[in-house]
Image 1 (tube, rainbow, N blue to C red):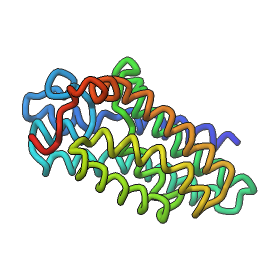
Image 2 (image 1 turned 180 degrees about the vertical axis):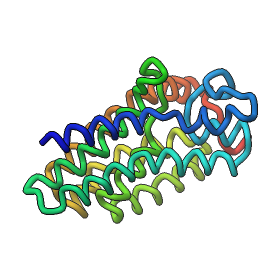
Image 3 (image 1 turned 90 degrees about the horizontal axis):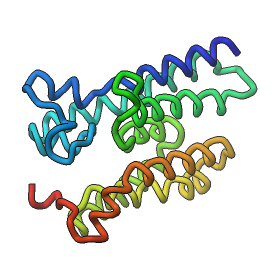
Image 4 (image 1 turned 90 degrees about the vertical axis):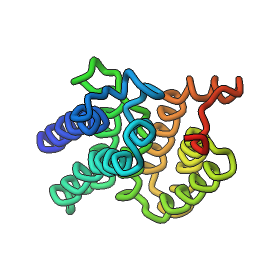
Length: 199
């Protein structure tokens, strides 16, 4: 299991890499000080344009995907392969939320979670993305789409990839995403959340 522990540690360290900060820094911007002050693709897109938001999105997704691909390769014949693959993705997700490089103050985890679920259960992710797009289009709020998609994931995983480890991973990740969105939820309730349609 030494390999697994090392992979989990490396996944966490990779997840901790602040993609948004690396993308914005050459422009003299710190996303933590501007816009929504979140280290995420949406804030980078608001500050620098959709192209750089997409770069941030793909970078954050890759943080979840790469450790899981490594786990799939290293543990392809392991009896606990599902646990090890999901664990690698979850550690990367935790790194994004609580990065060691930034005093454990990270982003909200949606993009990295997207990378994780792309590996775990693409069909479930596909439907969650449809829900995300519709929710953003109707409400105008990216946060609404993120909250809805994350809440649906445990149920979609159960429907398409009924694996207890995957279901538990999706549930815990959804709870953490909602926790990280607590300020967005408060602003939504007060009618103060910034609409994507106005950017």
